[in-house]
Image (cartoon, rainbow, N blue to C red; front, side, top):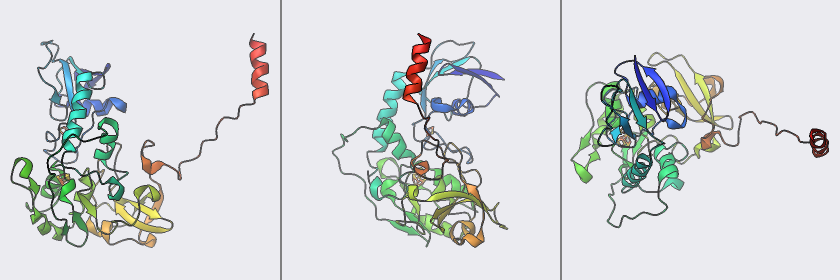
Amino acid sequence: MLQVTIDNHTIEVPEGTTILQAARMIGGSIVPPAMCYFSKLKGTGGKCRTCLVRVAKSSEKDARPMPKLVASCSTPVQHGMVVENTTSQEVLDTRKSIVEFLLINHPLDCPVCDQAGECDLQNLSYEHGLENTRYEEGRREFPQVDIGENIKLHMNRCILCYRCVYAVNQLTNGRVHGVLYRGDASEISTFIQNSIDNEFSGNVIDVCPVGALTDRTFRFRSRVWFTKPMDAHRDCKTCSGKAVVWMTGNDISRVTARKDQFNEVEEFICNECRFDHKNTTDWVIEGPRKIDKTSVISANHYEKIKQAAIINPVKKIIEKQAEK
Ligand code: SF4
Ligand code: FES
């Protein structure tokens, strides 16, 4: 086992663990954000740079710091390593710059974007973004593309994290789409249209960290925070059938895979479960989905209301006088 200290928390991890994975084992606010790494998809990471951290001590044998900030999602832990994330001003300043960079072309159309309320970039911008843009050049613009009847590709919002490319490569048969061109001309190829035949293609919606790939069966139907996410399952021959059904009143507005605390899919679901079963009778509803309490989705509904402690002012004064 290798010992690593991240923001003053020390943990032992198996060899081969990355700094990001070690930070996730510790948990809490020290976990670096990740826009491209997706633990369920092989080869992801190293694209977005939001997870940069400072290695203040390389290892027990080599106490020197690493000369530059490193991507925590692709840097393996070494024994005795000391890492700074939220405790390093350099990291926080760089993260601000990365967010500014990601927002160069990303439109701030959250008020009309279906991903609003569950968008990693929206959260990141809220925490690290600038109020104004310094960018004066023209932004990239693409026509919106319907990828079959269920998925909408809105390239203007894409941050080129490659997650959808890995998802389709690894969940479906054969390579059907990818990133065309390089630099600021890069774009997700519309050959993604060829992937619609595959029964797992809908998972690109769940892995996309922004609103570039959205569910056409749910588009503009509701804001996510007005819906109630419920764990549900059904007998499915293709996937585990374990999903989250998002309810508006007694109707199912959309179906997604279940996601963990890092906003990653627990188990990928098939298109049939996702798109074809919107009746409550199709599902066994297990109960409310536990959503991170800091998420806007958990606001206003179905969390058990905690009664505020009732303070009896007269009793308090008497107690205080007694203490004196
Ligand atoms: S469409 Fe979404 S998942 Fe695919 S590369 Fe762009 S941001 Fe990433
Ligand atoms: S999550 Fe590490 S570079 Fe994107």
